[in-house]
Length: 367
Image (cartoon, rainbow, N blue to C red; front, side):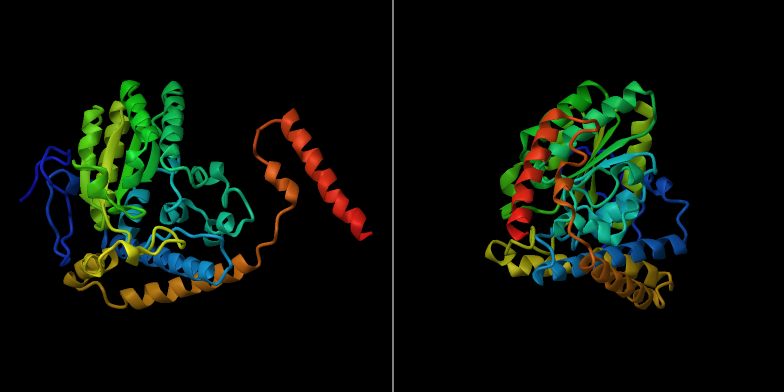
């Protein structure tokens, strides 16, 4: 069935523009958002997803080898992140959780910068102002409040930028996310709430967290919502473009629920085999976002060499990533106080002096 509107209405409707078999599914409004895409653009989206998957695989391996303290894999969620990130303008500002490695990479973070915090060498792997993306947020859902605050600033400056916040289905059970949506709706703030529903909040299935579709929650706050197949990169790209255009025109928030699946563990400290049926994982393997786009290109006879080229480039990026990660140097201990405040602060100065004196004790013992 061809739907006439991308806005969520009722039932279990989920918009896809490419079927699991790689067939194009028409949509009267979202199709207009991607009329500019060429075959080279589609191959580029495949390349993006292949690269971030390889970065993710290498980072997971580095953690298993003791080189990173922790890693939150994105395996399976490449389409939702790549499609949405490619829709953003450079002057939009992103507030993410700890899993949006593809978004950070496409915003301009170097691969090794994705690992610096997990290796314990920095509080943030990248310069937030340079790539216009805040450091990854560990506190579940807190970044939605940050985005709403930034959205208030955008509105006061009468800019048409958009604050974009990424979070998972588990975060929607947090009070902070509800508070963020109340505030964004009440004050008509230019915020895009992008929820990656990857089916699990660590071990908790989404069906236990919410008896109703998550997109329906947004409607309760008065925020229009779109529900898409998050393993379809074209749907993610088109829906995000549509939502951003609406936000810039009306200065009001929009909620996107991207239905996807976390194929790996929640983090490298998790064992999903203890709570997730193997058959469920196998079923989702058939919906792999890279395979779906590859099938679409194959149907157009445009997939020749696609996988080999992407794999070759990805392997080289992973090689450099490992090399640069292992070469990261330990920071000066006093770096822990850097960037806490934008100006000098007497409490921080006192703590810095205490740490310096403490470290000095060891130097005296060694002299």
